[in-house]
Image 1 (cartoon, rainbow, N blue to C red):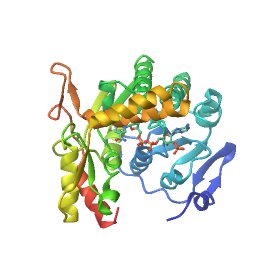
Image 2: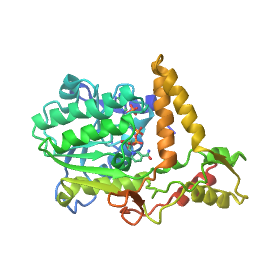
Image 3: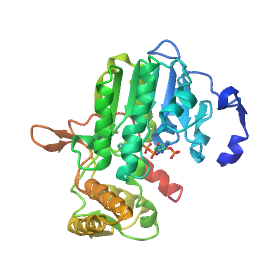
Length: 346
Ligand SMILES: NC(=O)c1ccc[n+]([C@@H]2O[C@H](COP(=O)([O-])OP(=O)(O)OC[C@H]3O[C@@H](n4cnc5c(N)ncnc54)[C@H](OP(=O)(O)O)[C@@H]3O)[C@@H](O)[C@H]2O)c1
């Protein structure tokens, strides 16, 4: 695989600091819904879903301008065919000058998200930086914003969830059309134990492994859904929870599926949720004197949240998570993904 530095050599320097990858754009597919290619401003383009949606949009014949940070590395490899602009999304002036450049765009697509989950970073990125982009987009008459969000915002307890909700509210109140997509768990978030199990270690289960469930969604299926949101005007001004195909699956079922693929007897180690509570309490106390430990406490809280809350639609009447109420899209299952990882040895 080529690395980012060799890839950069293939970019042709364009006027005013933007870069185009030479000669790799595929022939555009038919634009069934919009009738014409759209011009899209994409942030978070170097992330997991950002890369997948950039490719899906380009394959549909749309024009994609990605605004990335100068340190963006390997993520750029998957953005062939898009225009890459470098700048600082946390700086309003840079968003105007280096990002939008006073040009016309049909829509903004945001897959931007804090990489750390630390409270300072989530407010700087998931809220303030996205607000910068929203404000510049609005000033330039951009029609709409498609926002990648998260299903867990229905029950907010964590700093990143509050920051995301604050931005969703700003977007909804902005006067621009919006489509907010709140997906369930991504495959990557459910694959962290594959390598350790392949090395012969047990699968770590919180409680009995059936405290939660989710409908995992692949990067490509989510990207295809986001493209529909970009193209289909009937999906304007909606907040859309979305999961992948098939029934909801618990952590124990995920583990069982992996052991079956490996042809091995299941082996689990049960981790009591109470242990996480003790760790969180200690880190929270120590966090009073250290920002580093405060951030670690938040990470532990994030871990506990996902160990105890399902990534499914929350029925507001019963207060229960409901797999039936959680819409599905796509074709790829987590089992397909595990089978590929096992085949490729993790
Ligand atoms: N993981 C899950 O299971 C799951 C489930 C449901 C919803 N979600 C939601 O999906 C979204 C994230 O998806 P993802 O996994 O695709 O994210 P990701 O891979 O972590 O990518 C984050 C993107 O944001 C950019 N970014 C972060 N900090 C930045 C900064 N300071 N300046 C400029 N760019 C910055 C990253 O750029 P660099 O490449 O330069 O770092 C990258 O392009 C989040 O909103 C999350 O809540 C996740």
